Amino acid sequence: MQNFLRKFMQVVARPLEKLGKSSSSAGEGKSSPSSGPGERTAEVTLPEVRIRRVLELLETQTVPGLLPNLSGKKVLHATASGTRQWDLLQQKGAKLIVDFDVNPLFGPQATVSSRPPSVQATRGSFTAAPFLDDTFEFLLLFGATPRADHLLNWMPEMARILREGSRAVISVIHPYLTHQINPRGGFPQEIGKYFTELRRAGIYVEDIREMKADESVRSLFGPAKDDKDFAQIKGSPMLVFFKGVRLKRR
Image 1: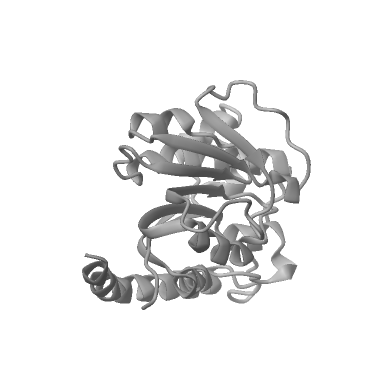
Image 2: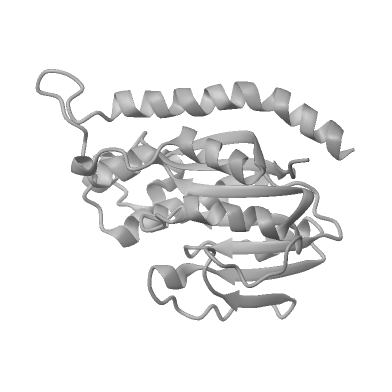
């Protein structure tokens, strides 16, 4: 079965790899500091806390459509932000949920008091995850935060703790938004790089979703149609979801 999955993913990966590269190329073209005479990237000057709220709302809205059936599975719910989806994982049938707070890399986070008793909690770093090899059968990582710049270093650990054939759903901040926050910094990352590094670690991407700031996040801003803060990000790509399967090399 695993050999079939591996061959199947090799076929599926080809168009997705092209998508990852084209998305990165399109982003680079769109967000070049000088796209044309007199044109520059529209800089986003919103406070970090507000950007995080938009990212967390988009994560919450998008993830239900990406989760598989988790009946009887051991699940790692990892987050570098304030997004929590324990109830959704339980609804999908998860047998065991471990909440892994990786936020200490970026600063202290308030204690979550609403955590269900059935959810085990731990904190630490994803550069050296405190779990044995092949512990989990599904990984959900909410990593779309302006400060999550360690994600590429986390991928080998994600693969290590996942069993053969396990699924993973991972969110990251969109490279274009990173560029808008700091136009002078260029493009420190790109979608194609995430795709390549996930595959190198042994997580083969099945689906890529790019989420934009649309009317669904307007509630976080003022009611006026010409709200200047919302106008900064309206229509811009905010985060990327990767859905993949863990396959070990033979």
